Amino acid sequence: PLLELLLSCRWLADLQPAIAAKVMQGEELSTFAVEGHGSLAAGRIEGQVTVPFAAACRWLVLPVFEGERQRIGLIDLRHPGCSHELASQFDLSYDLHKVFFSVPAGELSRADPDFPLEAHGVLAVAELVGCTQSCLKWVAQYAKDRIHFGKPIGSYQAVKHTLANSLMMLDNARVASQYLAAAFDNAIACGWLEDIEASQEAMTALHVAKSYASDSARCVVENSIQIHGSIAMSWELK
Image (cartoon, rainbow, N blue to C red; front, side, top):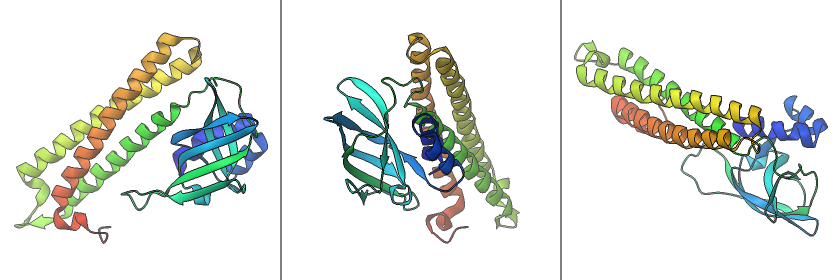
Protein backbone atom coordinates (compact mmCIF):
# COMPACT_ATOMS: atom_id res chain seq x y z
CA PRO A 1 0.00 0.00 0.00
CA LEU A 2 2.53 2.62 -1.15
CA LEU A 3 0.37 5.74 -1.16
CA GLU A 4 -1.40 4.87 2.07
CA LEU A 5 1.93 3.96 3.70
CA LEU A 6 3.49 7.30 2.78
CA LEU A 7 0.51 9.32 3.94
CA SER A 8 -0.10 7.40 7.15
CA CYS A 9 3.56 7.78 8.13
CA ARG A 10 3.16 11.55 7.93
CA TRP A 11 0.65 11.44 10.79
CA LEU A 12 2.26 8.54 12.61
CA ALA A 13 5.35 10.69 13.03
CA ASP A 14 3.22 13.09 15.11
CA LEU A 15 0.99 10.54 16.87
CA GLN A 16 3.43 7.70 17.57
CA PRO A 17 7.05 8.33 16.46
CA ALA A 18 8.12 4.87 17.66
CA ILE A 19 5.53 3.17 15.44
CA ALA A 20 6.44 5.45 12.54
CA ALA A 21 10.07 4.36 12.86
CA LYS A 22 9.08 0.68 12.72
CA VAL A 23 6.94 1.30 9.64
CA MET A 24 9.73 3.18 7.88
CA GLN A 25 12.11 0.32 8.65
CA GLY A 26 9.68 -2.21 7.22
CA GLU A 27 9.03 -3.98 10.52
CA GLU A 28 5.31 -3.15 10.45
CA LEU A 29 2.84 -1.82 7.88
CA SER A 30 0.35 1.00 8.14
CA THR A 31 -2.45 2.16 5.89
CA PHE A 32 -4.92 5.00 5.56
CA ALA A 33 -8.69 5.03 5.19
CA VAL A 34 -9.51 6.13 1.64
CA GLU A 35 -13.25 6.35 2.33
CA GLY A 36 -15.31 6.88 5.48
CA HIS A 37 -14.34 8.09 8.94
CA GLY A 38 -14.60 7.28 12.61
CA SER A 39 -16.79 9.00 15.20
CA LEU A 40 -15.53 9.81 18.68
CA ALA A 41 -18.00 9.55 21.55
CA ALA A 42 -17.76 8.45 25.18
CA GLY A 43 -14.07 7.67 24.81
CA ARG A 44 -14.53 5.26 21.89
CA ILE A 45 -13.95 5.45 18.15
CA GLU A 46 -16.59 3.71 16.08
CA GLY A 47 -17.38 3.49 12.40
CA GLN A 48 -16.70 1.86 9.08
CA VAL A 49 -14.02 2.75 6.53
CA THR A 50 -12.68 1.43 3.25
CA VAL A 51 -9.02 0.48 3.55
CA PRO A 52 -6.50 -0.86 1.02
CA PHE A 53 -4.51 -3.91 2.14
CA ALA A 54 -6.10 -4.02 5.60
CA ALA A 55 -5.30 -7.73 6.00
CA ALA A 56 -1.56 -7.08 5.64
CA CYS A 57 -1.31 -3.97 7.82
CA ARG A 58 -1.07 -3.49 11.58
CA TRP A 59 -1.96 0.19 11.93
CA LEU A 60 -4.79 2.24 10.49
CA VAL A 61 -4.71 6.04 10.32
CA LEU A 62 -8.11 7.59 9.70
CA PRO A 63 -10.11 10.80 10.04
CA VAL A 64 -12.07 11.00 13.29
CA PHE A 65 -14.91 13.42 13.97
CA GLU A 66 -15.97 14.63 17.39
CA GLY A 67 -19.08 16.55 16.48
CA GLU A 68 -17.84 19.14 13.97
CA ARG A 69 -14.22 18.84 15.05
CA GLN A 70 -11.98 16.79 12.84
CA ARG A 71 -8.94 14.90 14.06
CA ILE A 72 -6.62 12.17 12.89
CA GLY A 73 -6.86 8.87 14.80
CA LEU A 74 -4.76 5.71 15.07
CA ILE A 75 -6.26 2.22 15.38
CA ASP A 76 -4.57 -1.13 15.87
CA LEU A 77 -6.17 -3.41 13.29
CA ARG A 78 -5.35 -6.42 15.48
CA HIS A 79 -7.60 -5.12 18.26
CA PRO A 80 -10.55 -7.47 19.00
CA GLY A 81 -12.92 -4.60 18.28
CA CYS A 82 -11.79 -4.49 14.64
CA SER A 83 -13.01 -6.73 11.83
CA HIS A 84 -12.78 -6.55 8.08
CA GLU A 85 -14.19 -8.14 4.98
CA LEU A 86 -13.11 -8.07 1.35
CA ALA A 87 -14.88 -5.35 -0.61
CA SER A 88 -16.22 -6.10 -4.07
CA GLN A 89 -13.96 -4.65 -6.72
CA PHE A 90 -12.98 -5.00 -10.35
CA ASP A 91 -9.20 -4.81 -9.95
CA LEU A 92 -8.15 -8.17 -8.50
CA SER A 93 -4.60 -6.90 -7.91
CA TYR A 94 -5.74 -4.19 -5.47
CA ASP A 95 -6.69 -5.61 -2.07
CA LEU A 96 -9.54 -3.46 -0.74
CA HIS A 97 -11.36 -4.13 2.54
CA LYS A 98 -14.27 -2.78 4.52
CA VAL A 99 -13.10 -2.31 8.11
CA PHE A 100 -15.56 -2.16 11.01
CA PHE A 101 -14.39 -0.96 14.41
CA SER A 102 -15.47 -0.03 17.90
CA VAL A 103 -12.35 0.54 19.97
CA PRO A 104 -11.19 2.71 22.86
CA ALA A 105 -9.92 6.08 21.68
CA GLY A 106 -6.15 5.93 21.47
CA GLU A 107 -3.84 8.52 19.98
CA LEU A 108 -5.58 11.49 18.38
CA SER A 109 -4.17 14.57 16.70
CA ARG A 110 -5.31 18.01 17.72
CA ALA A 111 -8.48 19.30 16.13
CA ASP A 112 -8.30 20.42 12.49
CA PRO A 113 -4.79 19.17 11.60
CA ASP A 114 -2.54 21.47 9.57
CA PHE A 115 -1.63 18.71 7.12
CA PRO A 116 -4.81 18.14 5.10
CA LEU A 117 -6.52 14.81 4.60
CA GLU A 118 -6.95 15.80 0.95
CA ALA A 119 -3.23 15.13 0.44
CA HIS A 120 -4.26 11.56 -0.37
CA GLY A 121 -5.78 12.91 -3.57
CA VAL A 122 -2.46 14.48 -4.57
CA LEU A 123 -0.69 11.15 -4.24
CA ALA A 124 -3.51 9.32 -6.04
CA VAL A 125 -3.25 11.72 -8.99
CA ALA A 126 0.53 11.27 -9.12
CA GLU A 127 0.14 7.48 -9.07
CA LEU A 128 -2.48 7.60 -11.82
CA VAL A 129 -0.25 9.75 -14.02
CA GLY A 130 2.66 7.39 -13.42
CA CYS A 131 0.57 4.33 -14.31
CA THR A 132 -0.67 6.06 -17.46
CA GLN A 133 2.88 6.91 -18.46
CA SER A 134 4.01 3.32 -17.97
CA CYS A 135 1.06 2.04 -20.00
CA LEU A 136 1.90 4.37 -22.88
CA LYS A 137 5.55 3.35 -22.73
CA TRP A 138 4.65 -0.33 -22.97
CA VAL A 139 2.23 0.10 -25.87
CA ALA A 140 4.67 2.31 -27.78
CA GLN A 141 7.31 -0.40 -27.49
CA TYR A 142 4.76 -3.03 -28.55
CA ALA A 143 3.92 -0.95 -31.64
CA LYS A 144 7.62 -1.01 -32.55
CA ASP A 145 8.04 -4.76 -31.97
CA ARG A 146 4.80 -6.13 -33.45
CA ILE A 147 5.30 -6.91 -37.14
CA HIS A 148 2.32 -7.05 -39.50
CA PHE A 149 2.41 -7.10 -43.30
CA GLY A 150 6.19 -6.99 -43.02
CA LYS A 151 6.35 -3.73 -41.04
CA PRO A 152 6.00 -2.67 -37.39
CA ILE A 153 2.38 -1.71 -36.70
CA GLY A 154 3.67 1.58 -35.30
CA SER A 155 4.58 2.64 -38.84
CA TYR A 156 0.91 2.80 -39.85
CA GLN A 157 -0.73 6.19 -39.67
CA ALA A 158 -3.78 5.10 -37.67
CA VAL A 159 -1.57 3.68 -34.92
CA LYS A 160 0.69 6.75 -34.97
CA HIS A 161 -2.28 9.07 -34.49
CA THR A 162 -3.65 6.97 -31.65
CA LEU A 163 -0.31 7.03 -29.85
CA ALA A 164 0.04 10.78 -30.45
CA ASN A 165 -3.40 11.44 -28.97
CA SER A 166 -2.49 9.29 -25.97
CA LEU A 167 0.69 11.29 -25.43
CA MET A 168 -1.27 14.56 -25.59
CA MET A 169 -3.71 13.29 -22.95
CA LEU A 170 -0.83 12.18 -20.73
CA ASP A 171 0.93 15.56 -21.02
CA ASN A 172 -2.26 17.39 -20.01
CA ALA A 173 -2.59 15.20 -16.92
CA ARG A 174 1.07 15.59 -16.04
CA VAL A 175 0.91 19.39 -16.18
CA ALA A 176 -2.25 19.38 -14.04
CA SER A 177 -0.60 17.10 -11.48
CA GLN A 178 2.49 19.32 -11.28
CA TYR A 179 0.36 22.41 -10.71
CA LEU A 180 -1.60 20.49 -8.08
CA ALA A 181 1.56 19.60 -6.17
CA ALA A 182 2.73 23.22 -6.28
CA ALA A 183 -0.66 24.50 -5.10
CA PHE A 184 -0.72 22.10 -2.14
CA ASP A 185 2.86 22.95 -1.19
CA ASN A 186 1.93 26.63 -1.18
CA ALA A 187 -1.29 26.09 0.81
CA ILE A 188 0.46 24.00 3.47
CA ALA A 189 3.35 26.50 3.71
CA CYS A 190 0.87 29.37 4.15
CA GLY A 191 -1.16 27.42 6.72
CA TRP A 192 -3.93 25.20 5.43
CA LEU A 193 -6.50 26.60 7.87
CA GLU A 194 -5.15 30.14 7.88
CA ASP A 195 -4.87 31.07 4.19
CA ILE A 196 -8.34 30.18 2.90
CA GLU A 197 -7.63 31.51 -0.60
CA ALA A 198 -4.56 29.29 -1.01
CA SER A 199 -6.46 26.28 0.35
CA GLN A 200 -9.35 26.86 -2.04
CA GLU A 201 -6.93 27.16 -4.96
CA ALA A 202 -5.34 23.86 -3.95
CA MET A 203 -8.72 22.13 -3.77
CA THR A 204 -9.69 23.51 -7.20
CA ALA A 205 -6.38 22.23 -8.57
CA LEU A 206 -7.13 18.83 -7.01
CA HIS A 207 -10.50 18.54 -8.74
CA VAL A 208 -9.02 19.63 -12.08
CA ALA A 209 -6.08 17.23 -11.80
CA LYS A 210 -8.34 14.33 -10.83
CA SER A 211 -10.46 14.99 -13.89
CA TYR A 212 -7.50 15.20 -16.25
CA ALA A 213 -5.70 12.22 -14.73
CA SER A 214 -8.72 9.92 -14.79
CA ASP A 215 -9.68 10.91 -18.35
CA SER A 216 -6.08 10.48 -19.47
CA ALA A 217 -5.78 7.05 -17.85
CA ARG A 218 -9.03 5.82 -19.39
CA CYS A 219 -8.11 7.13 -22.86
CA VAL A 220 -4.56 5.72 -22.83
CA VAL A 221 -5.63 2.32 -21.52
CA GLU A 222 -8.44 2.02 -24.05
CA ASN A 223 -6.06 2.96 -26.87
CA SER A 224 -3.48 0.51 -25.57
CA ILE A 225 -6.01 -2.31 -25.58
CA GLN A 226 -6.99 -1.39 -29.13
CA ILE A 227 -3.37 -1.41 -30.34
CA HIS A 228 -2.52 -4.65 -28.57
CA GLY A 229 -5.54 -6.41 -30.02
CA SER A 230 -7.05 -9.48 -28.38
CA ILE A 231 -3.87 -10.28 -26.39
CA ALA A 232 -4.60 -7.15 -24.31
CA MET A 233 -7.64 -8.85 -22.79
CA SER A 234 -5.71 -11.81 -21.39
CA TRP A 235 -3.78 -12.33 -18.15
CA GLU A 236 -0.99 -13.93 -20.22
CA LEU A 237 0.16 -10.54 -21.53
CA LYS A 238 3.54 -9.72 -20.00
